[in-house]
Figure 1 (tube, rainbow, N blue to C red):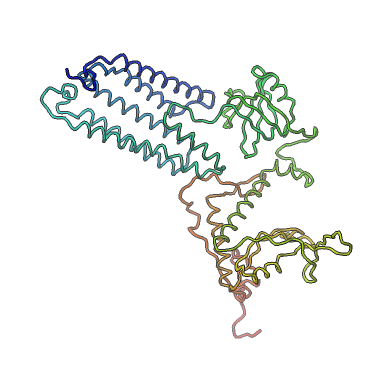
Figure 2 (tube, helix red, strand yellow):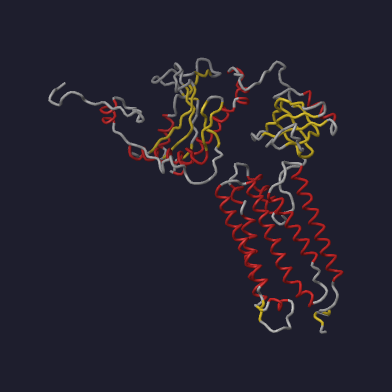
Length: 522
């Protein structure tokens, strides 16, 4: 028999191919075993885990087809090998898509995953059909010397590879969009992208977060499940809540210190790995749970401090209010978000954000002022009631559009909508009329309202309806939400004649109507 590249085509290659196959199969078993162990110590198994296991079985069957002895045996087993191979690849792809659905449950992501899964299943059916019926009669596939016809195998392999590569790339890029939209810093986004992009090369490698680490935050009330096992929640600076597990059989010193720390204390915790909480300890806990390897309190809290859901802290304990009243923190976060939206809208319209001084000279008009004595006897600064004179100077200086979030100070009686110190969005236009001012203000308000829908929703916290970060998935608008917002313009004369005030509440249907006959003058 002729040789190709110095090797006999019918030479027995079973030893080298068997060694390669064995190494690959052993590595596959190790990776899948690590995945199942990681899932066991977490929250149990999912559809993607069982699909991975079935795919491993098909990989074993593929490896068991020792097609390396000679060309004749290779052709006999090629038909079975190709069908089993594409089945294993299909199951691995479906396992990855199923794992993605556990992590990204949004509606658009599910639709994209379903579309890719349909393409993968269609590709699998088409390839299996081509493999089985590639020759007529079918047995010519492994008996090439008999009469019959076969399709172009090279073209068949190319047709197999192209959709296989395309679906691989689609699955690889599928989680990129949701990760980019996460409200975390860029370093965390890049870390998640690296995890998903690297993890996609092998469905058997676990990609769930965990393992050793160090965390800092406020430790909540401790729960002693037994003399050896204790749990407590740790509130991280990001707002995430993780669960700490102190086991005296693993780390006795850390467990003893863990039990001595008072609730609400700030701590730094070193963790070893994620713990497997038993049903008796924490039933169906959705929090990530870690073993406490070492713990160090950063500060102590007063012994008589009582923290319950119903406790109301006085204004002198403002830090306790913000820490234990989530509705207050939610309002601050919403205020920060709204300021950013309004500022971005104004800057898109060409406004320049300019800070003006707070210390100014005293002016005779307006409300009473807060005076700040200087080191020079008999002289004092006055805190600005508003940056009125500063922005007029800016207009004369050539700054055509100015804005800032200005701090204002007025020594007068407190009102429901004004305190002695308050913040206002201050704006000024040069060479503008009333129509331009109304249009610019309307545009930035409508822009903020449009951004408000996907970004925030309302939630009742401690009896208060508070705007919070929304968990509404992306999708179509609710049926009861207007397609676009509109701002009604009313003249002063219309307001007075129809509502009797220049600040009408348009939600009220009542209007001022004349009930006397038109012939009667009054």
